[in-house]
Image (tube, rainbow, N blue to C red):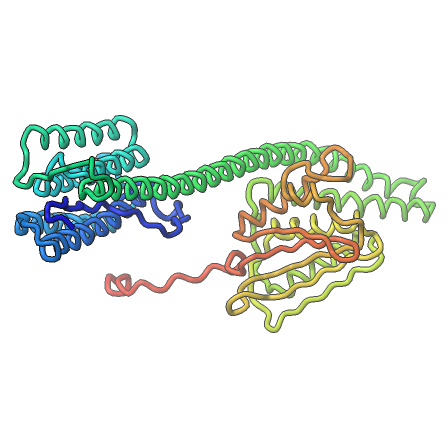
Length: 458
């Protein structure tokens, strides 16, 4: 190679690994700063390797001390950035802009010392412009553009200590043309990979924002339903109380005391009225929160057995196949929201399959801390559209107003307790709805440890 070959001021190469997907743990500014820090390490290593190769292998006289000093200062700045920004969760645009301007300054200095404007790697400025365009707001990206333009203009006005002779007529044999081709391939490849990576990050972010917006709409829908339900429950309280008083008066009247059949009808009416009151009370308890008022400590087995016993006694199911596989019983807090959610799932299975409903309970996961409750039926199963829109309001094949709200509410209660609800069709027929819930969501609160300082104060 011709000893007059230009020095390649290596740019910051983007990380080609898959992007991180947990934006809830770190802000976008912090993720961008971490990315710039990582890219800068690549730039430092590349610059030092290129300088050493050109100076010692190709025999090109370079201001070695100055160029290695610039790389060392850039390394020190990157290390300081790593230590300073790591504990912070949010980083503003000004910090990102300052970091990019430092990179532009370092690239300008290296290019100045290795050929200036005659160095074909001057087009690496375009990578800095691309970084600013995708990571910064419009005004800050234009600051990066202005800085790169100033760097190019400065190298035109103030030539550096090394001059690169170019002879494009020699074609690919000319070192300048070789450097220009390498610069083009490097810039195009890194820009395509980097912008592609940023596009994936943006698509993931947009998808998460869309999911959050959908969740907000669903929660608003639940709030409206809760207000409507609690209002209806309050309105029903007065007529139910009036009916209870009237039934008590009728029980003492002569026409009813003389006819045992009428007394039996009154008893049945009183029982059904009591059930209506219990339903209204449950609505009032759970209208505002998944965990009802006055929680009661119990165990998982007792809670599930009582729930299944009550549901089986009040539903016209022919066969309820209840299987509970618990190696050990665990203490929990009785949760009215969970009780209503499981009841909704069982009611949906009963509507699809009045002859048989199955319910199986197991503990899975690490140390058996995941409650898995599967409700099965022998009905026609879910349609493909219903499965695709599972958990959305009014997603039902029942063909009546309000259909699909039970599973919609169940899904949101499960989500509020940190669990998930899924559905699938069974073979050869039927459907299965599976609830997965961490036991920590139902665990009783742990007592706070005593404060040793309090005893000292006494």
